[in-house]
Image (tube, rainbow, N blue to C red; front, side):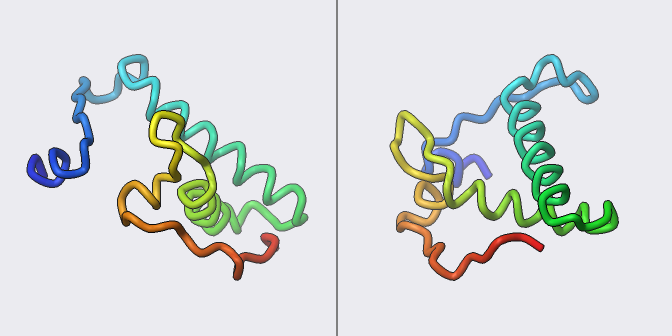
Amino acid sequence: MNWFCDMKGIKREFSIARTPQQNGVAERKNKTLIEAARTMLVNSKLPITFWAEAINIACYVLNRTLVIKPHNKTPYEIIRGRPSLIDFMKPFG
């Protein structure tokens, strides 16, 4: 794990379990995913039983579309080293 993180330029930070105050970046990412999934479910008029699918798709889309500023690349591009293909994507629902 250390080798992979070093190779990809990932800085690992540790925090105490069950203390979200110490991990603001991850908590903000989770909030973004939850907001995206909630919006997708409301707009598609699907029931809450599709929550897991909405979260999975929101994560998939955000990893391929949100640009990380210092790198000017998406998370997918940073890890895979190539741009993602998103032409096949359709609206949720």
